[in-house]
Length: 265
Image (cartoon, rainbow, N blue to C red; front, side, top):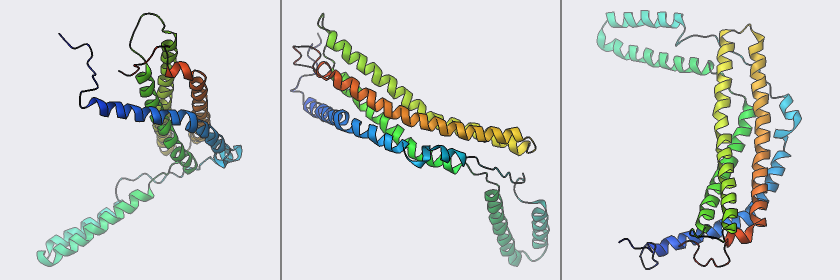
């Protein structure tokens, strides 16, 4: 028959687990009570910076210069290289092999320079905001993951009756999970922006005489700017709402039952 009390404290590994759970609890309580209010104010300061001012978006439109579409090297360079290479192979082999290798090296460098010249850059103003925003989204996801673990550890064993406090814990846990999912979606939106932008640029390269494609590209950049501004506000609001939700229900969150002496085990 299986032992009913599986997690005994006299098992060697359990004290280490209890110690780690205590560290999680201490870290999360500090996170909620001290860090969340600070982060809300930090997001307000972030929104007040120049990146989210209407003046910033006025200069966000980027003129796209599509290079001439050529694969590899120009034809004349290929022809010159081929004729030189033929000459190199029809004369004395030993002396000309080094010359042919030098020509190959020159061709490789020319090809690299040609590809770099053909690169269409992204919108640097948008990329600047993305690079600042992504770590903040990642930080929220990590914070919520830790809080989710903490709340699950606080939920007592299942019993009949006296479960009002437990229902509050479950409601908070559901809110944390929902917010974590939304934050993960914010992170994924960046790749979708780059993909949409790249598709329009390929259309501009194919149909440079259609101005609507260039206007569409500008609209995509402006839409992304607005989206990122809204994401910053949502991140701030998530921290603020979770702070108030948990602090207002702190007693029931920490001790859902009046006789809850064995929360974790």
